Amino acid sequence: MSTKEKRLDPMELQLTPKAWALNLAAEMRSQPSEAEFVSVVGKKPYREWPWVKPFFILAKQAEERHPGKKPDDIHMGNQLNRQLRTEFHALKKLICKANEIIRGKAETIGLQTRLKLSTLHTLILQDAIGRTARRTAEWAKYYETTDAEADEKRQLILKELAGYTEFGLPLGRTCPSLIEDWVDELTMLLMDVFAHKAVVREIQEKYFDGHAILFCDAEGKLAETIKSVEGAVSIFNDYLATRNALFISESDPRDRADDAASAIVSERERHLSIDIEAIRGRAEDLLVACIAGEWVKEARENAKADILQETGEHEAHVWRTFQERVHR
Image 1 (cartoon, rainbow, N blue to C red):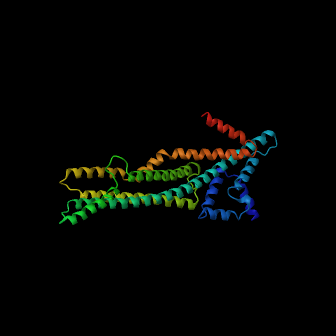
Image 2 (tube, rainbow, N blue to C red):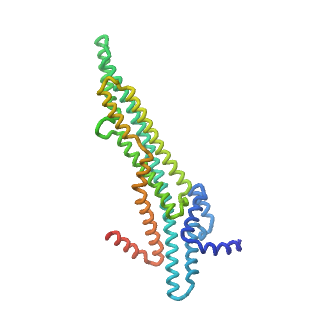
């Protein structure tokens, strides 16, 4: 074991900050979940933890590259030490931020999707009740009663049905309906989840040579959430298609007014149909670069501040950053 450690040490001293970050990501993904990863790593000595060890090795690397004792050598060694550790720290923070945000997004969007599905089922049920009430009322209006008592019952039925005829989804009106608001909200959820998945992919390709940086359980949770949202879209689009088919089958070809109304509703339903691929493309075009840029910027700034805090330069760095933002 001692011989093996001596053989590995020179190799480790050659590793770049990115290589250490890739090693951290690989160890993270070697376990099924974040909890199991922490449990496994916790059994190792502190200096062997994959997010701690690189700081010691990179500091040693800087010392070996500038071994002199002259002030210039010491200054250059310290500068390289800070540069290498800051670079790794920024990549580590980027990995942590990606996992934290994706885990949170998967949870909140998953919950919101379940609420949206519940709302959709209620709206579909209300629409079915409203449509049935309207058609029954239309039939009852022209039903010929045999006597006054029967007519009184017919009027009572019409009055009761009137309370349900407004339950339908008014897609033919000019103002947005509940279902149209529902579509807008679900579209925003799709945009959000697609954008963040693409942000992770963008960061992996640009800063980690394409290597995955999410914990396996976080990645699985994101995939599960996307599947859930896409499932909600499928249910909704199927419902629209069924609803449109009902309008067509129920319309009277001899009645031009009914045809016009049916055409309006059909057009509105085509407009409401959710195109998943179009939304995915729009999310990637409009949001990914901005979100990824913010993640990277924050990770670098925080990493730099953490390293500077060791030498007491943290406050000056924070003040300079604040001034740059104010005068931007």
